[in-house]
Image 1 (cartoon, rainbow, N blue to C red):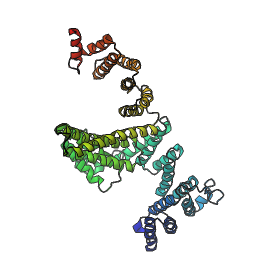
Image 2 (tube, helix red, strand yellow):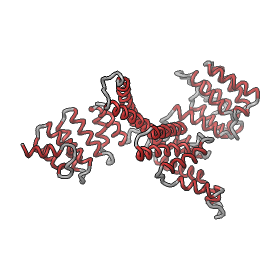
Image 3 (cartoon, rainbow, N blue to C red):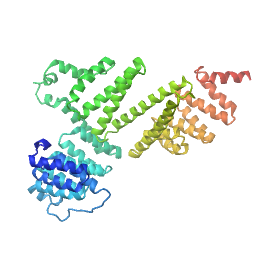
Image 4 (tube, rainbow, N blue to C red):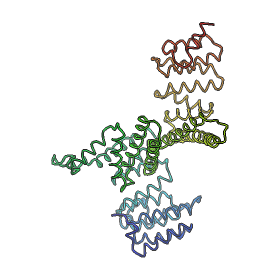
Length: 485
């Protein structure tokens, strides 16, 4: 059964809805709920009305604990008999209950079951979404919501919810499997491969699209893009499809990725420019939009959004630093830009640290995130707080060497030079090739030995670098001067 829109309401119901919207604007939440309940008796599929009533109920009951229960009513969730007999009456009862306790698990479950039975899957979704919003770490509710999305073929949303579950519990094998299944189903639906597969060979993909040019364009979009012109063409094609369907997650995500790639290509080809900054702004906008469509359920999208925002901030900081380096910093003209630079650096450092802390709080078992938090804490001068994070991060082979490098730096800053030496020596011994990482670690090890007064050990580190890379920092000067003296 289709959802009722505002335009499809009767004149009387629509007038009540308009009154409810006005009452909501002036904060008369009780009147909003009363009006909407009357509208829903006539149009139980009016989802926008339910959303307005729920928002009013949340505002009215903020900070209250009502303790309201449906236990003992004729529409008990456990019996289910009355729901089957008259689901619309059950929906009405649930709505009245939710006016007093909008996040009630029992009332929302009643609404979910009754709405499904009455043929309003979107209303059922809304009931579970309300519960998931009130209980963001309840895996049972999230599993139920994801399964419901799968049942009504909203596979993108199902994937997003399963990803939230996996963030809460990376070892949830059921969520991992079902996320992959839902993702595959979404791909099949978008690509219409099922229709081709079931045609018995009478259709191919080009036939489905209806014309060869459209098929070729779609195939080209799947290819690796290397030039700004190719990206521009793809953006134009996808944007034309996205514009009338702006809540399409897949199209929004693809536009975000293309604008990010356009930014990278433009920077690589022409260096920093206002044009490149424009592509970066567009990428941030589309990642933000996609993240909002997914209700923050895809950690990778949220991460992209944050990372690009930090990159934009870094670019502005770099621009100001370059400009201030060329002018008299004490001149009145430079003062506002110097103040802006100080403000942006503080803003960046604070945002990076807060973001790192939030990511670890959301995913406490992710050692990559532990490393990033340790790095952010170290950069903020919080060396004692950084040490335990970096020690845990060492367990991840992908960041082990970098974590030991930063641990050594933290120990140096705290004057614990013997512990710093241990970290640097262990990290250097695990790197076979004399790459840039090993050179950096050996150099820091040499500096630590120098502070300890161990001249021979210090020179040994610098000589090892010298034999491989004469031009690395000041090692040539240090090594050669040791022979002169």
